Length: 305
Image 1 (cartoon, rainbow, N blue to C red):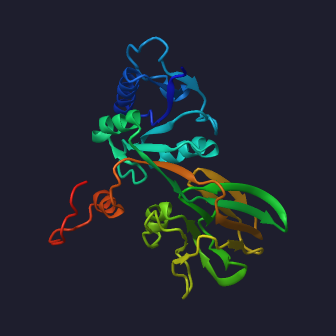
Image 2: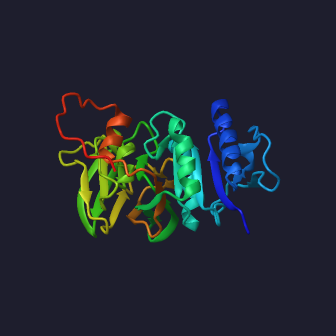
Image 3: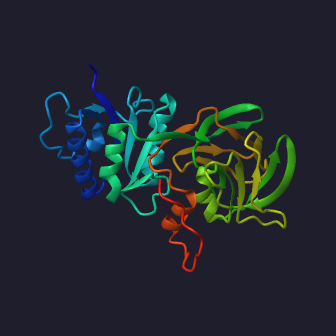
């Protein structure tokens, strides 16, 4: 019988994270679950004395290396989870984020609840939800420049600090507005708590199917954030006589955009799958992560269970 395998993606830059990873390896090995680990991340992890046949299996961090794994366990912050998504998305393996960083908004569990999270995975007591993604296509004069994708957001931004980026914004084949700006953000509901939030965009519950457009530092009267349909198609056109720009997806995948480039954005064909453990309401996560003031609330708590 083939052992169950879980791929661990680790932010290995902190000694405390490496010690946590060693604990995970030993705990899962005792439960008969084998770890698949990325060699360059695991080099400094002291994984203790594991049963024969359950020592971590070394792989590279290439996209698709999670194929055949049951779950991708992410030990780190949101940046680590976004990196792990590149490996898990092509093969449909769900991500379970454990926050070892600061905010860690994408994480499902905190470090202090890691043992309970591991028990839930071992026992199969978890659910899986699908998160919308974005597909992005960059063109110039009809010629394809690049295709890429995003879980949080795709942004078209100026590449020169001294110059204003002039863009035309299009939704469903119709022009909506033109303005000078630092950039335009197109975010998923998952990404509404990230860059789009910093640019003044609304928070969108993950269960909502929609796309969010948020101009960044726009010089225009009508340059407000917009929430549009999940099947809408967005295009951002860069002025042909202005400076070049850059397309960034999740802050990880970058495409240089020459003047006159056009970026087309739409709902991604392949979602990212995420593990849910306790069904905690999104409102509770907002309050905890952003330390929101709720003193004085007199609502009736929901019964347990």
